[in-house]
Amino acid sequence: MISATGQSLKRVIETRWSARGDAVKVVKKHFSNILNTLEELTGEEENSLTRADAGVLLNAVQSFSFLCFFNLWESILSDINDTQIFLQKKGLNLHQCDTKLECLQTYISSNRDDFIDNSVAFSKSMCDDLGIVIEKRVRKKKKMFDEGSSDSCLTFEEQIKREMFAFLDRVIQEIKERFKQIHNLLEKYAIFRPTNSFE
Image (cartoon, rainbow, N blue to C red):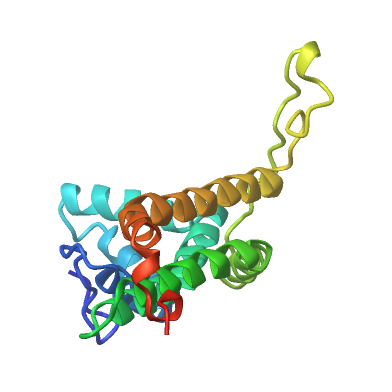
């Protein structure tokens, strides 16, 4: 566990989203210090296994794509965690739970572009500050019958953005699927809601 930051990094061993959110926040806050520590662990004074593991991790986190997704996760985990905390309150009814989950889905869906644009801007800024080279590769054209499709020629940044859009869509779909039973129960017994009952 890296402690050069003055604060221990958190192991993600819990299933709660809050644990993931806390872990991401700590890494983001101390990212530069973490890089320095990993660089030290690649030194000759360390054993070969430590150097190899630190080198692999160092290369992985020093990339445009990692920083894009890292910031994207940090952006949405706080809202997911807020929803989780709300759902743990005592005395909630199904309608309140369903409404909160709908709000989360709507918020992520309506802010997809902003989440991704902000994440790309954050990654570019970090790459510039840390001297990380942004890969400039361009996706090759597909076969003739695919030319003209929207993905026939994508820059590296466009490709990352497309992957992030797919990621957010998957998150939204997972939220819908995991809590579908709550919504179905609410619809089934909607007649018993106070607002729908006869006076």
